[in-house]
Image (cartoon, rainbow, N blue to C red; front, side):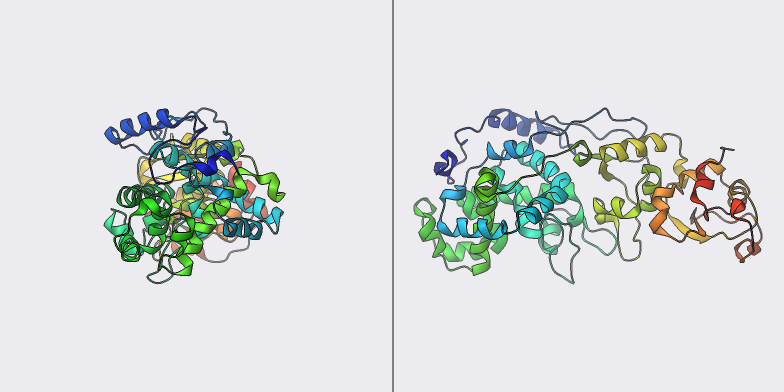
Length: 419
């Protein structure tokens, strides 16, 4: 049995080997006075304010994510019950698939783990989004749950999140994580047991109170807890969480090679001077729209599927490119953009002039990487609110040579000299 299996889940005290809890507790005290949004950064934990749009971030390095998790485990893991071991073996029947799923989740895991450390919570709760959603930012179906934490709409609204057709903060990694961890902390204060806090997160605190029936939580060993009158889904929820911690604690036992975090997994928050269209942001960051939406689904609504967004999360390299581009991009043009067909005879500079913008702005908004999938090659991303300064004949299909077509050859725009 691992040493950490003997840790007391009923009290807020560090487990043996929990090396950084005092520093994290101090960080929490500071955080309560200064409620700033975090930027994902390597250990040791530092509070980093959102960078101004014109500032380029310095180089970031990944941290030993799995070791950081292990030093915070407190719920028992492999030694908790035979059911935990059975579930751990089920998770790892395909070790390659298991590892690949965590590789895909790594950027979000790093962000959640930093918040776990800031709140001084057990490391197991960084694995909870994997139980809930496989760390995928899932949109709601009807009135169902959404996001990596699978928060219900009523719960999210009661805790200050916006839930609407065009902005659902349950899909916001930072905002939803803050609410989820606040809930877990509240449940721990209520039940004085991290296991029960996890079960309350799944079943709801009132359902759990009814199941406990006033019984003391200090005598609930694994067997008695498993006999509580709760759904099998809630009991399995806890078992899966403990199974994941078991695998992370002893990956070699299950033949698993856990992926390591790379520099590309570090997420940085960018706060533009004004709300920005996600298509435009993707172009300025040099990524495709799918990559932009991956970490910014909260802004993809029914009537406005591409924003505008007032803050963005991006991998560090893309965030640096975006911040650099925003430094000299007109703030008045950051809003809604759309794809417009431009099969005309003329140069990109001439088309930009007809739009009333510079060729440089047009080129920045139509980076080949972002436009490759977002709209056809014979269309151009243009500001919605700009009135065309040329006759409507510009949109008619007119034969032209490839060299004079704006996006038929995306490189043509990229190579335009600024006006």
